[in-house]
Length: 409
Image (cartoon, rainbow, N blue to C red; front, top):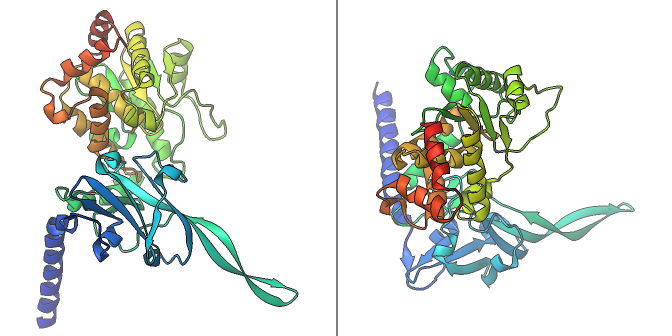
């Protein structure tokens, strides 16, 4: 009994210390008047400066790399460019390399909702070779994208290092990582429960509308090795039929099918044959990082005109129904009067699918703010703000907007 009591106290003490660490770990991120190496910035991989700069720090000894020849920075802020001379680190001293830039230049979120980065290293590595029974040592260049060793909890997700400011709470990342790493089995879903059906298929009504649904691809297998995949696609097609969907917007292009594994349902085939399926090929980078571009605006205009000229209800999807679908449906929701809170909450529901994917609402928020040129917190009427944008930039006309609202609401 005494031993059990001691063990229980030890567990409680550990959990308590972890909780305190999670809450206070924001203090790990400090600001310096000028850059000086220390164990914290080498472990974080960066240091914030008082003048609005950030210095990235690569310590080759921590990564176990003896002879780096060149070190580059890749991240959510440069399109994950792997060998861009504009983002090359310089040798600092000892085993460290650094790169300094304006903090605002890297404040572009990745899937975690925070700026993400990795070091791309070209290093000289020794290897053995035997020639005529004699062993000799040679050297060759190897390319590495190492994960930050022994990172602070909450400063890494999916092997990418995160840039957190002193006001950010890493415990949020810790909790989100649990969701990101979760793979749900089919037996974990109660398919008699409509809520579980909506979760597994990622199929649901878009906020602010009564005739627009969004979700997973109805025939392409994106996670063929998961035991949920066949049932997921079956349920997408069932819900298309049950909800009387008449027109489909496909954001991943007109992909061919693998006839041995994939099949287009009769219901979807009939929609295609009737000319009520719009195929658009867009990308992750376009919808999140180029939302203020003519390309994105013209794409949204094509979608709006398709809705205006085809029968509803409508279904919008890409592969997973996460990124392209998430941003497009969020724009349509905003045009139809949904609040930012409703839109952000709906966007995060996709994380519940349990396919080891995660997107934080901050990524969607970045897309909106880049397009509108102001912070979400500064916007009083999102519907008016986004409507004015599409009208002012002449992507659509007032009559096309009125028709959209009539068709979706």
